[in-house]
Image (cartoon, rainbow, N blue to C red; front, side):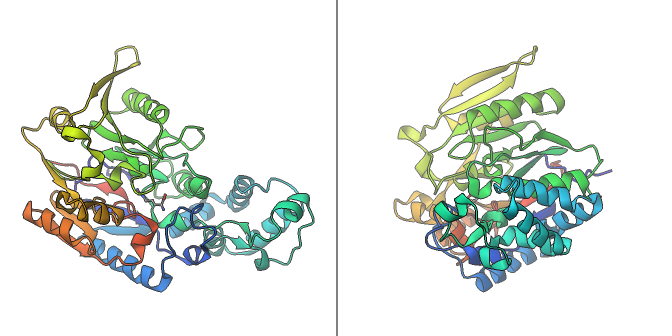
Length: 409
Ligand SMILES: NC(=O)NCCC[C@H](N)C(=O)O
């Protein structure tokens, strides 16, 4: 029986994927909150939705079943009969553990049907959504001008990050910034309660109850025994050690390649600068490579007594060839390596390709130089429209959480 989560590569035919259609949460970004909510501009929602529907349709047209986070979350909460517990937990993580504001918010959220409640949590709760005037010190002294009781979660359409499928399981992630920390609660509920996933023997390799951060954009499943994980703005070396230990103990995974990338918003995750697109082909943003193409990598293996060994290397190509057992490797530079085109296209996720089968990728249409390069290197490129979605700083890989991929032959 195929497991409800089964991902042993970045490139096996994509059978099932989870997306989140951008909704009103995106309209709740303002210029003041943009930096904190991790956006560099405000997408125009009707167009962003059209673009997202186009992306989903490309996936369906190529034989992928598309599931939506918002539906799975509501179905899970109903199936587990945990609406009140979920609302309580969300309130607690939104800093409303007790008190009159907690009670008013809880009453409002519980009055909605489960789908509407899930959507409302994603959209955020504005102060004028409910008939309640707070009288506490925080509201009076600190928050009086702030329009929200509960912040929107506009990054939810990047389903790649709050959780990551690995083998017959997943990591449910402790996210770096407050703006995204509550997001992984939805996946936690789905795995625990949704009939499609609950009690099916799925492994949670690392859950969200940790202080050290890791995000799915950094977690790349290179094969059925090798992962690459970015040491990045969003993923700490400690979290990488943790997940490596857990995987080495209970799965076929025996190799994690930790790759150190610059710590900034344009390159926040490994998949913004490096993705696998075929058995022996990768995209790479030249901006992560130092003099002579060097980059710091550490290959991690288990010892017999459950400890870890680390091998430092600065030749990414050599490391990948060795660990994947390849004779040669094609690293395709974003924007053809041009000093203007490469950073421009990387900014709009020109390196963030989603492979839906070996050698078949979905990319943003705006990155036409990188797309042309991919075609010249023999890839089939399916372009998706991208003027608004890209304002959130994520591309096709970021916007998709593969749940099932076919194993490679
Ligand atoms: N895997 C990815 O690179 N995801 C893109 C996340 C973009 C989002 N605005 C963020 O900063 O977290």
